[in-house]
Image (cartoon, rainbow, N blue to C red; front, side, top):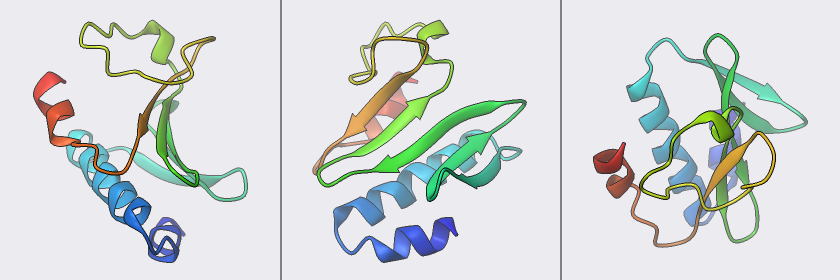
Length: 102
């Protein structure tokens, strides 16, 4: 289902979600991919790690326990209130920089 979602996004968002997915799978080969809430990819490992949501102008990676994570580099740029934190990826974002920081 995640493959279908990525394939249905006929603009930059499909490629970006695909790259983010690959990074997640590379970082944790034991992570479980799920499909929830009528079309949201979810990655879990001993509980939910993050979701990959797509909107008109952004791909948003929301981390379930983001508020508990240190963020000295300021990667989190969305959903800064509450227990979750997110990274909103816009067209042209360079995700390779995140790997260096993480």
